[in-house]
Length: 51
Image (cartoon, rainbow, N blue to C red; front, side, top):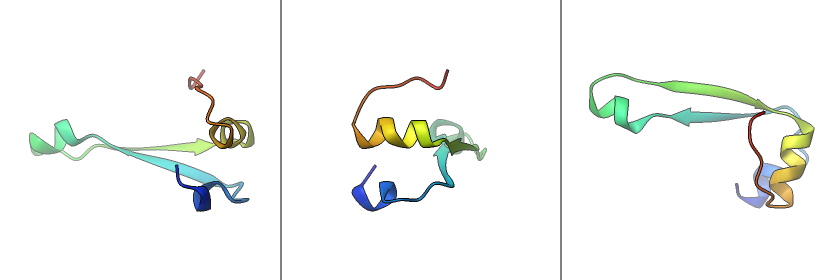
């Protein structure tokens, strides 16, 4: 993520686009709500899993 994406936006989502399915003619989008804890991990560039 770039710095402006982490600047105090507490109600954020991440959109994930599956290009492999798009090449087959399907669109696949998933949205994930980013919690404050997830944003803090991203700010510190720590690896984290969705669990």
